[in-house]
Length: 314
Image 1 (tube, helix red, strand yellow):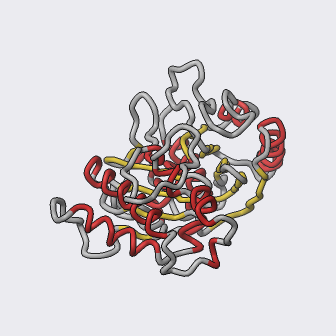
Image 2: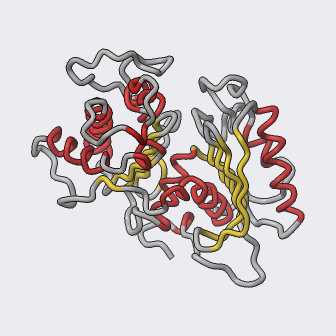
């Protein structure tokens, strides 16, 4: 059982013979991962649905969930969605996708559509908040109550857990859209349709593809100058996270870091330089690290949300 988590999100690594697994759906920008599992050590089934339009994607997910519900059954459903999403249970648009740039998705009732057919507890949160909770349960955040999970892929998302729970206010946090100082001399256009100098616009996978002008990410040398604005931008975001929330560790994953793992140490080095000794990180190295669950952080995030929903009193 994980250390440092409130009881509502503690998850057993196994289950008794008579108990049912959890069902989880991770909705991503390019694909949705449907998982039936007790945890990362006991995955019963996993299926991928391409993220196209809501009208095509959600019925395909429902078909998978319906098959699982009929056999072997599941005791809870977790939905970890790309955002922005409405997480306010008092809101008439609770569970809906908000102002996403993905055509056809704004206003979609993701939670209601996917949960309506099933008489089980439902957990709903952002994909990155789910991944952060999964990393605390089983990965690089074990034993911690304050932790940040960053994914750098098509966009930049951050799951921030403070005192054991994802941050909340009038909305979930959107650290990928924090505006940061540009590296001097960097005038490459932002790929964000809302901001000219936010983290996602300057350092996401989409931004990197734009900067590379046709070159493949995996073919770019570690000393290529293209990495400098990426590293500095992500370090600036990490600086803001450290000063604003003081997480005990920051895990950075996603397609860009998977293809270029050398970036992790470079981001940490740039963070230390940026802090200039004003704040001391809780460890000499490894404050910024790779997710312990690797590519399973996102799928296990949905399972974590399902388990949390089952553990929360009605």
